[in-house]
Amino acid sequence: MRSLSHPLVTGGAGFIGSTLCRLLLQHPDVEKLTIVDKLTYAGSKDNLPVDPRIDFHHIDIVSKACLNLVFNQTHPTCVFNLAAESHVDRSIEKPEDFINTNIVGTENLLEICRHKNVPMIQISTDEVYGSIEAPGIFTEESPLAPSSPYSASKASGDLLSLAAHTTYQQDVVITRCSNNYGSHQYPEKLIPLLIQKAIQELPLPLYGDGQQVRDWIHVEDHCSALIATALKAPAGTVLNIGANKEIANQEIAERVLDILGKPRELISYTDDRPGHDRRYALDASKARELLGWQPIHDFDTSFAAVVKEIESKLA
Ligand code: NAD
Image 1 (cartoon, rainbow, N blue to C red):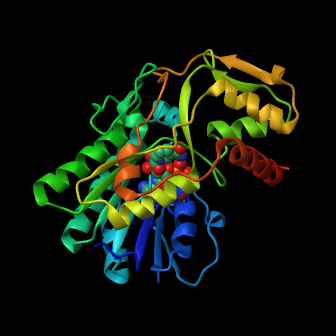
Image 2 (image 1 turned 90 degrees about the horizontal axis):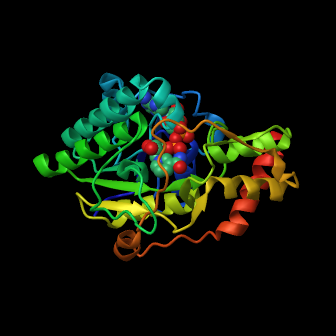
Image 3 (image 1 turned 180 degrees about the horizontal axis):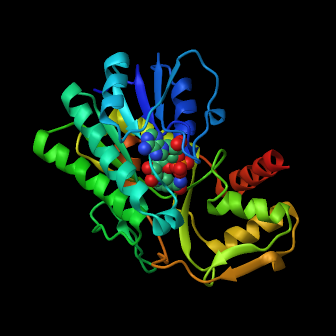
C-alpha cells in the first residue's frame, strides 16, 4: 500500500502538475507536498496555491545531483513525474530539450526512486500510440508508434519505466492520458491559443483541414485518476486515462467562437504539421474498473466555463 502522506510532484508549476498539487492538498492523507520544477516558459509558481505544506524546489530533473539533494532533504513517500517538455511543435523545431527532460530526467528519477525504494507514477500520454483510424481505439496493449520527437521521448520514458519494473521489480506505474483542457495551460496549446486569438478577433489558425480528432478530458478528472492510481494500481501497471470525448479541432475552434460570441469566419487554415497524427481515441475501461474511478466533468458545461475563465484572465 503506497502512502500519500508526502508526495513529491515534478513539473508541479505546469498545467497538469499544478492541478494535481491543488487536488493533493485537498486529500486528507497529504501532510506535506514537495514540488520540483525547473520553471521553464511553461511553468509558473503563480499556478500554485499558497499553502504551508508546500516545499518548492527550483530544480532541473536532468541534474541527478540536485535531485538527490532534494530526496535526501525531504524523504517523499511517492513521486508523480509530470516534469516534461510538452509541446509537439517545439519538439519538431528542437528535439534536444525533449530528449534531456523526458528521457534523461525520467531515468534519473527512476534511479533515485529505486535506490530510495520510493514508488513512482510516470505520467505519459496517448500520443505514444500514434494515430488510429475510426472506429479503432487504443488499449494498453496497442503498440507504441510515436510520430513526433515529443511522443517518441515520452514513449522512451514509458519503456524505461517498464524496464525498471521488469528488471528491478521497481514500484512504477505508467498512466497515458488523452488531451486535457482546463485552467493554467500555457497559451501556445490549442485551446488557450484559440481563445487568445478570438478575443483579439485575429484568425484562429488550424493545421491542415482542421479535421484532426482529439479525445478530451478535464484536467481535474485526469488528476483524480492519478491520485487513485497512486493508491490502488499494482506495480508495473499501465493505465489509459480518458473520458471518451472525441472532437475535431475545427469543432473546438467553432465552440470557442460561439461561446465568446465571435464569427466563425475567423477560422483559418495553415499548412499541416509534419507527421501530424490524424486521430487519437482511448479505451480507459481498465482504469475505470481497477481504480473505481470515473470522470465527473460534463464536457459541454465545463468547456464553456474554462473558455470563459481563460477569457476573463486574458482580458
Ligand atoms: P506543461 O508544459 O504545462 O508543464 C510542464 C512542467 O514541467 C512545467 O512547469 C515546466 O517548468 C516543468 N519542467 C520542464 N522541464 C523540466 C525539467 N527538466 N526539470 C523540472 N521541471 C521541468 O505540461 P503539462 O501539459 O502540464 O503536462 C504534464 C505531463 O502530462 C507531461 O508529461 C505530458 O506529457 C503529460 N500529458 C499532458 C497532456 C496534455 O493535454 N497537456 C495529456 C496527456 C499527458
